[in-house]
Amino acid sequence: MAKNKQAPNSNPPAVTTGSSAPKLPGYLFGLLAVIVSALALWPVLQNSYISWDDNVYFYENDYLTRPLGTAISHFFSGSLYLGAYTPVTLSVLAIISKLAGNIEPGNFHTAALVLHLINVFLVFLFTHRLAARNTTIAFFSAALFGLHPMHVESVAWAAEFKDVLFTFFYLAGLLTWLRATNAQDKVTKWHVATCLLFILSLLSKPAAVTFPIVLLLLQWYQQKSATRNQSIFIGIMVVLSVIIGIVTIYGQSTYPHMQESHNLLQRFVVAAYAYTHYYISLVWPTGMSIFYPYPALVEGNLPGLYYLYLLPAAALLFAAWFFRKSAPYLTFGIGFFTINILLVLQILSPGMSAMADHYTYLSYLGLIFGILMSINTLIQRASTVKALPRIATGAGLVVLVIFGTIANARVRHWQNDETMANELLGKYPSNYVALNNMGFVLHNQGQSAPAITYCMQAISQKKDYPYPYVNAINAAIALNDINFAAGLADSAARFVKPTPDILNSIGYVALLQNRLDDAIANYKKTIALQPTNRNAYLALAEIYYRKKDYTTEINILNKGLKHLPDNPILLNYKGYALYTTGRYQDAIIMYDKALSIAPDYKGAAENREQCLKAMNAPK
Image (cartoon, rainbow, N blue to C red; front, side):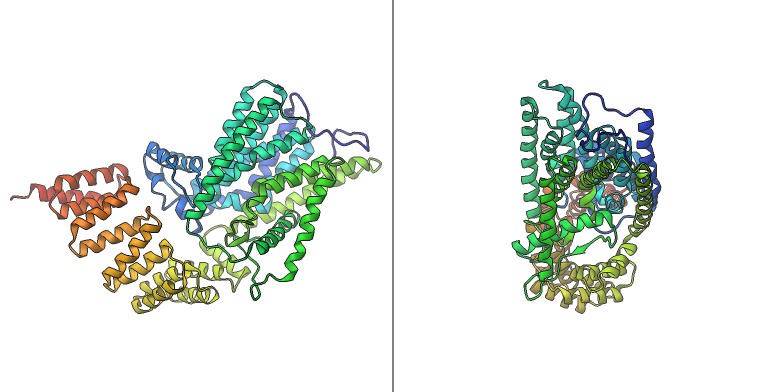
């Protein structure tokens, strides 16, 4: 794996100066890394959406079918998706939708794969520069980044398109910064380009807040102090990172999501466990999953075995400090990984999953580079063994074949909801998330009775987990067992913290039982928690229509349109309410606006025709 021989006891330079672009043969190695990555991951083009977040970003995202200007202005207006401000990602998705003419999953999987392959080539360019123009190290860095099985999640999960997009801007920004470091005290186009690319990365995914810290690490690795102008640019980026960080913290606090009940010390231990396992998965990528449960507490305590993970985690960090002079590439690699993984170790804000494969997408780049540079240095120091470079290269190619094979198989696990549910239940047969997920899939397949069985098992495992109540209620309604659905709604009201989904489900059961006042109360609670909840406004409008209280119905729809001014369904409902009260001209305005937003909206077109007939009917 060695190239550009050096004296046995010398360390390779951290980074070259001046122009470091590889010659044509070098670029071919970068293209080869792209090709092997494409061969491993091409089945992603055949995958469907899955129910985990893809609904929010794609088939329930009305703005993907709106005029492009309307969609982009909405995304940049301050709207949060899953508690995060990601307007660049959403705008790119809207552009892809417009170019393709639809929101079929293949369009976005294709875009994700293409962008991932571009990232592979950017990794080649970046590591080629860092490795003193060592093409072999750059090739293996790019190829391992491209086809590592842990990176499949970021490419195959449509909702994680933001991973590949923010990484694209992030890597491009690192490359322009390397160019800028040769400009000394001058503010060059490369400084400005770096700042702009950072902003695009930050607005693609908040994880890019680490960028200015990585720039400081890169300056250290280059053995260069930041100039005054570089420090100013880094300072600006730090301020922008803090702003987005505050927005994200606020968004996460307002977005309803489940959290585990581990205390701060226990979460710190779990973070050490996850941190260590990410290293293990780098070299031994087995047992991957869409979901990694938190360790179960025993009488409120974390099993003692998990505390042992503090030792390897501390040892790895100590190694980064210990080798900072003798092996700076190793320190850089561990530092790059740790900086980018730290925010998602969930010490302060735990989610439901202790780990996630897609958290490694950018961060593994550091470890891959550090390990390859370490192997290269060891080979150089054993220069008396002439065949060692060829042996190491051959071993590296074998690793690529193995990892590529695993990645290819892993892509197929992400094919659809059913494949993911089967995998999840197979790994964690008694976990409440896995049980609920299977119940959800079965209900969607029309198998409502077994769906209820799985959901009830999930509820027995965790009574305050809201989603199995929602899924079981839906399945019970599908079976026309309203009494059973009502019993579930009562249990949910007792044990589950109110969320929009739970409140809507309880309200719907009350509506089916004609308990209109109870239904109204629950839907109003939903709106109080989530003022943009379209379904709650529609349900309330339906209730007041039944009550023949058209004034209140119109007021409810006006309130909904205040928060969702371009929602065609709300506009259509308001049009019908106005039509019912004889305000035909106002109704036509609503229908026209709905159809201007959604030209294929059949219900609005039919209601408009009905309204026109009423207007022209003899008095």
